[in-house]
Length: 203
Image (cartoon, rainbow, N blue to C red; front, side):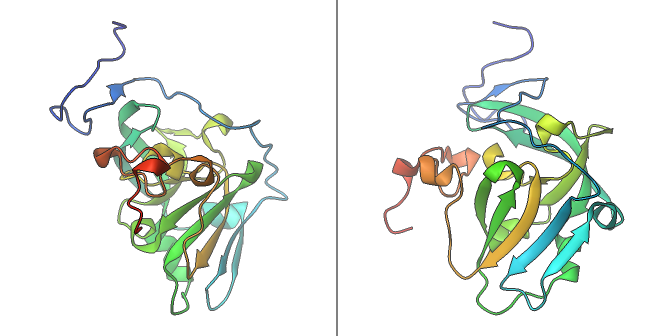
């Protein structure tokens, strides 16, 4: 077995559980090419069920209150990387600039490269949800989502979308890129919610 990973068969190590193995690298998994970033044209938007839509330039995003956190990252392809040090804007801090309209229950995340994903509002607003631009003391590499990626540690990594450009708040759930292609609509790694056939028909 390679020295940089160990198969884990039970929940005996911090943050890792049955079906995952540890890595010390950070593998790049992307559908399509890495988008090009131009800070003069790039913007970030909040829209949908909000009292007033929000648009921020790159400099305005970087000027928002900065936080850091350490959290694990679990990929649906079965690897896990522990103790990632993320820096960026906590979702809860961003939401101080946004007033949601009644009935908002989900967020639809829109990204460069035509990628999307969906989250229930309560999980998007979790204390450890972040819009990150740095990892382990360095700016995110373009292949890992620079200039801005969502980090949602409690869900599989495809929910931590790269190259985020907009957040759309919705009254109804709407499946994103991988969710319409057979991935689980929720994606809880501790329950191994990998594929849509595992979903409760009543969900």
